[in-house]
Amino acid sequence: MKLRNWIALAAGTLLALGIAYAAYSLADYSWAQVVDYRGPYARVRLPATQAPTRTRPAESERVVYVIVDGLREDVSRSMPTLEALRARGFDAVVRTAQPSLSFPGWTALLSGAPQRISGVTTNWFTQRVPVETLVDVALRAGRPVAVSAPTDFEQLYGVKRTPYVFLRDWEKGSYMTGGIVDNAIRLAKESSATVVLVHFPDVDEAGHTYGGASREYRATAMRVDSDLARLVTALQDDRTAFVVTSDHGHIDTGGHGGPESVVTEVPAVFAGVGVRLGRGRGDQDQVAATVAMLAGLPVPRDSAGLPLEGVGETVVAHDGRFDVQQAAAYAGWTSAVSGDGQATVSKDGQAARAAFVAATEARLARERGQRAPLAAGVALAAVLVLVAIGLLSWRALVAALSGTAAYYLVYEGLFFVVHGYRWSLSAFNSEDLLKAFFNARMLEAAVAGIVAAAVAADVYLVTRRDPRRPTGEYLPGWLALGSATVLAVQATLALQVAWFLWWWGPRVSWILPDFATAFKYDLDLIQATALAGAAVLAPLVTWLVGRYHPIRSTAAEALTSGDAASTD
Image (tube, rainbow, N blue to C red; front, side, top):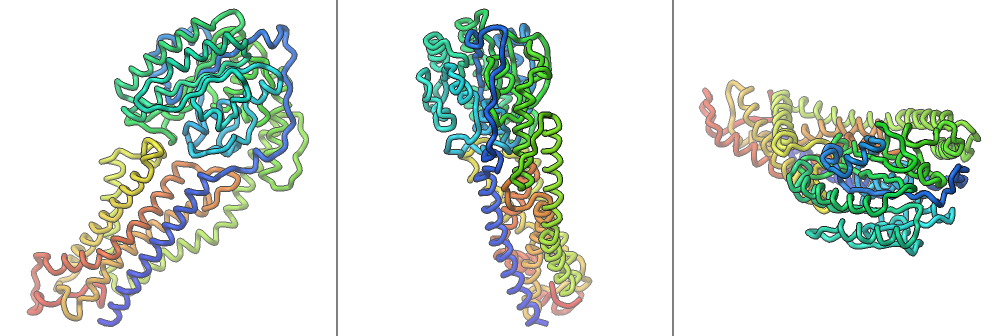
């Protein structure tokens, strides 16, 4: 019996360390899959779209397109200039796609292509975006564009192709919007641009530094609003429309990227020539098409959305170019999903969109069926670990499962209650805090694993009428209880990972997963990784509890011997 328990201790520790390594490798792979995701859609060859024939010359119209980075919808309603634009225009709320980060949001606002289509999923994207933007269609149509924005706009969108451009680096601690507005006004007057693209960075900086519910954040929004007023006053005339929107919001404590409504529901305000009075809701990928409609520009060929209904004087349903663009885009994307290389020719955009949804659901169902054996294998292995512990000692299994319950109480209590986190990319505030965030979660998982081992040892003592201390022939059983507890925790995490592997899979090649469940999946793997440290220390913890616990025993040798995961 003593030899069996030594073998159980060694095997359990090695298995826990092996699971930790496998979890680390899988977490690293899956995270890289999202960061490096490009998708097949931007590679589809789509026809160029054409500008409509308008009653007034297209070149006599101008859209001033302002992106207020990081502006919450609720805070936007306390900005006097923005409220004035709402009062004489169209007041919309649009929902971002996931993840709700800046580069993906800017790309959606300029191209109409959400993250799944554009392949821009993070702020680590370092190339020119592979989708067509409003800058592209305007220049292709020979229409001048002016840009006043951060230098990232050159990297992502190649805005230096126009001579009317002002770019500046992000500078923490400095107010940037004033200078950006000064140059936007100058460039607009120099160029007679069809689109004046302006980006305000300061609200986002305040959100990251102070939080979206802070007085500092609101004060910065008010200061930005004053500069917006200068822009509107300088450029408003009888041929100009204004579009003011945001790429994302901020949670109260600062941060974005997740699915929270204060992050994903952002303002989109339209005012000026060609804009009707009204209110509405929609998706962020509709804003680019709406700008194209107001400016008389071709629709970006990769746009997934139609113009917001009710904004413009043009009735979208009767403007055939939108239907043609939608039909071509969704037919091409359906071909990419189906993998047949053949795009079904359709003149009906709504039918083409429905076909794309159907193809997506069909491929997901097929791949989930293919992944089912892998997921079932992972789940079966997790169950077998628990069964093996029970076969060695039912008391050890009860104790290990009690320790597992304590683990989740500690870890989830820290995560949800103490820190106030959710399964959301917004939790770590900014990208430079990502490593520290995950390291902290690993430390907390290791600590929770130690607590689990202590609870398991205590529960084991309760299950015996005649407790034995961890000495002599009972020592390896007590030590094995520590390893068994860590394995039980890892087994329950593996069951949760198995579900994600079945539903979404570890590989991200053509569809982005739900990011709330994906974030939880990564956290599950990170916990399983961190439990390697607990696996090394847990045997010592169970020994200490067994050695010094104030138990009473009727056995004469109670002070010198005990039994954990041996015989019942």
